[in-house]
Length: 315
Image 1: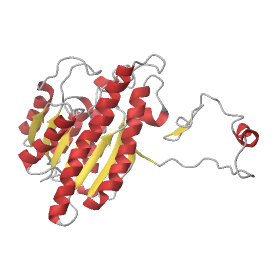
Image 2: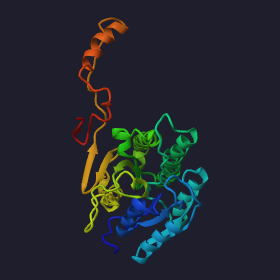
Image 3: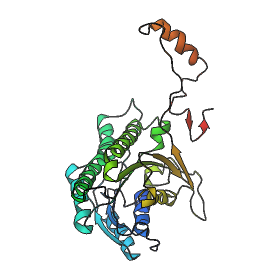
């Protein structure tokens, strides 16, 4: 790893869940681009959030950035804890004088079919993914708003959130994860609208990568013995670096799918069909006459979300 370019020089960044996988690749990329990085990772060994927390993963990535000539410090708090998230943002401000970039990546998995999922499995995933994204974004937003008021105008701010194709196309064994990732998109667009006037953009990515979180999903899929794995996290991190940079000033409230040398911009949902009642209010019979023929040739297992993702139609 070597420092190259100065696209993010003078900017301070936080990357959550940065001790391994995607977060690590993203933190290293921001460091390569010249940002000073707070590397956050709770450090639990289990992808389900189990095991004792450890400072080691965050400290090792921070050390990599420093060894390459960059600036980095480690933080090993739990972003799903409101006060820990406050401390994370404060660490960036205390260390670097400000916060400019927030990359939310931390997450866990507790996979189960909807009929088998426990309340604890639902709550744990929503807690880390969705609440974790809210917590850090809240304190970053407070910081940027205060800075903007003091400056009398816009400041520099970038939020990059991590959603998933599980939200886009559905994932039968991940109702908690898919719901959390869908919620993150809603949080992102709301944040983009709320903070735009302060000079802050917020975007979300749906990355596909071979990491500890996806080792079962991508086991034996497109593995390579030589060269860069098509599903390596390093295919995702350049987009994060771009969205964190001044070059992406006009990208706001957007959703991207990224993997293996491909970036796709996902459009907002559009109306597929529209029906108006011939009376004052719909009756059951009228809806039957209109909607039943519309769905007559549809496979009931062909859900709206799976209809077309990245141009791939249901067979």
